[in-house]
Amino acid sequence: MENIKYEYTKTPLDYQITEYDCGTTTLLNALRYLFKRSEISPEVYKYIMQYTLDKTDENGENCKGGTSTYALKFLCSWLNENAPKKGMNIVCKVLLKDDCSIYNKELEQTINNNGVAILRVYQECEHYCLLTALDDEYAYLFDPYYLNINYFDNDECCEIIKDRPFEFNRKVLKSRIEENSTKDFSLVIGENREIILIKRNQEL
Image 1 (tube, rainbow, N blue to C red):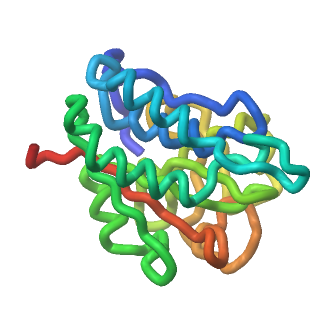
Image 2 (image 1 turned 180 degrees about the vertical axis):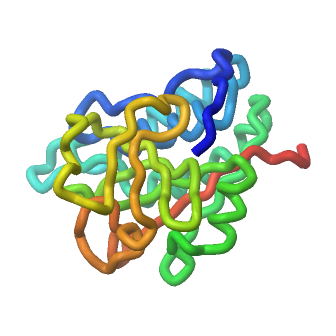
């Protein structure tokens, strides 16, 4: 990837602060990536915080089930309808089932036009991360779960990147993401399989 001079009107992408807020953090990271600080509505931020972390765990403890696919779909619809009214011209689209692939042409087009995508992947459990770049072989992700630099030393498909805080912190083979497995960064299998495309609406 080429060297980039960063715009310091933006904020570096962030890490989750509990074991459960990967969905919240990843959706906010999408906004951090796409918009300058001065363009992000505090009302939109508050709404995201309010409607994520909506699941209970197996013991019925609030928020410890993380963020459901239903919550993210709802927030996508809400952002499409309401964010432009707050000065944030944004378009969200959910890919499901057979369309949910790292090789999806609409996904590639979104990323190549400076958009992002939220992926629901495995990392010990179901987990959200942000896709910000693609090349022929690799996907470049921001994983909100902070890990030691050596964590993937024994996994030839994944690499931790520490010097691109505004863009990505993981380099993952696209073939791993597409694997029908529960290995790190493979897309979730079954009804929770999900990719959300997010971009600025240049027509508004």
